[in-house]
Amino acid sequence: MNRMSKWKLSFLFVVLSTVAWGQTYKIERVEPRNWWVDMKHSAVQVMIYGKNIADLDMVAEGLPVVGVTKTENKNYVFVTLETKNKPAGVYPIRFSRKGKVLASCSFEVKQRQPNSADREGFSTKDVVYLLMPDRFANGELTNDSHASTTEKANRQLPGGRHGGDIRGIINQLDYLSDLGATAIWSTPLFEDNDSTYSYHTYGQSDLYRVDPRYGTEADFNELIAKMHERGMKFILDVVPNHWGSNHWMLKDLPTYNWVHQFPGYGQTNYRMSTQTDPYTSQLDKELCEDGWFVRSMPDLNQRNPLVLTYLIQNTIWWIENANIDGLRVDTYSYNSKEEIADWTKALRTEYPNMNIVGEVWMHDQALQSYWQENSPVGAIQSYNSHLPSVMDFTLHDAFGLALSENEQGWDKGMIRFYENFANDFLYANPNNILVFSENHDTQRFNQIYPDLSSYKMMLTLLTTCRGIPQVYYGSEIGMAGDKSKGDADIRKDFPGGWQGDAQNAFTKQGRTGEQEAYHAFTKKLLNWRKSAEVIHHGKTIQFIPEKNVYVYFRVLDKKAVMVIINNSSNQEELKLARFNEVIQPFTSAKDITTDRSFDLKKDSWSIAPKSAHILELNVN
Image (tube, rainbow, N blue to C red; front, top):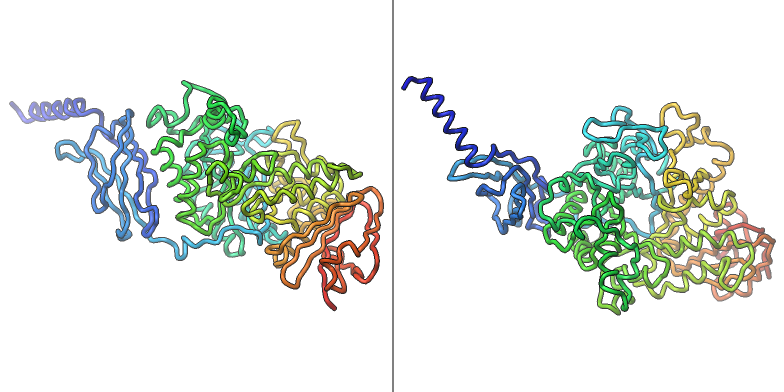
């Protein structure tokens, strides 16, 4: 046999062997790609994905393998590696058959950033500015569309991609800091590869990739680093309840029960009260928890330990990798109830001081309270979510009604606010609640109340009541939007965020007179609040509203702030003797927004209609 014939025979043997062993093996994904030394969560479940990779034997060099899980899908292997007491470095992982290495990858263990576990998180000292990156500012034109994602930029389409990005946020950090915002909550930043309406990025398709139309991972890290230079905090919006239908893993599920199947599609009934109702049917409860939020958002099965660990690790990875300060959790109460508590507890164990706020869209304080950690309401059913903070939707409801009710009734007008706070005994920690009058899912406040006086009353209450205030982008310049026209109308582009915009409201000279009036008032209050410890930590003393005038105090040691909101259409006389239990030690008061002085020795004050006052009480 000549040399050429021997070569052909040898080649044929290789081809036949490849067919016998399966196709050529190639590892396509390793998630997470790295971990860190000295983590409490030291045993890392590494998902390795590649064609028929589960057919091979695996060896990890230098890291103990404490578990290997294979599913019915041979394209996945879940390997648990122990990183405890292991030095930083790159550790090889090899896949072989009969001693022959056919595929390999590596897993890196990195050094942690100093004091990473002790991050403070956002608190009552902060004002949170909520923005949607696609609608805030476009700082990098070249990434408006991207070859790897389906939906392309079309600013003419209200519900389309408009091109806002991380660079746009970076470019406006000075604007936000000057306004008085101390924290940014951005709607999700990870890839959403839906073919339409992907701009909100709640239907995520890759949890380990920044959406390339927003920028890169390096851009994300730069944003947070530059925020920290300014003393600002970043709150990451995470969605453990569901993914987008175009998530890469859903096209090749690791296991049938990775998502909830009925079989196929079953939509949630949205009745979150089924999670607390002692009389609920099991069918209704399960459909609320396990049903898909919408058809394009498959519901994740967190009762599958592989899924729950994947979600826990993904969130920890981003916190550690990008140095994130806090989390906002979308659709918190739609998750599997016990498992979302385990998810939250795992994060709190790793970062005990970091704040996490959950979206619990309920219209009853008891039902909201149930989802906050150590809730006296939750304790009735022996449930503890471990979630530090919830969003105060009942206060949001009051904002939507009270300010339009010019006359006070038994349950109308300013009494709505009084009763909302009167129910704070239901919360384990009413101070650690996110308070807001609007967000990206609700009617715009300035659409309901298109006048500056209402805005001033709202912002006065929002920035002085208990809790952590959140403002929505554009509200500070009077932006409106009608939700009945669709979500895009309440998520309009911030004027001046795009090259060629006719107006630039990021600058004083670019704002109209009306916009500047909104902005100046907002800036005054937010910057005053930065150093107002009596607001951050003081107790609340409130008085029953009379004639639609609501008065309450924040008191800390020998400091006090008096808040007066007259929602009446009439000028009202405020008799000071009623408030002696608080104001008696003080002799004067000054309005922080107007610098107007108020004499506490007088019998009464005349309060203008539709007005708000924040008075610092002093002893002369």
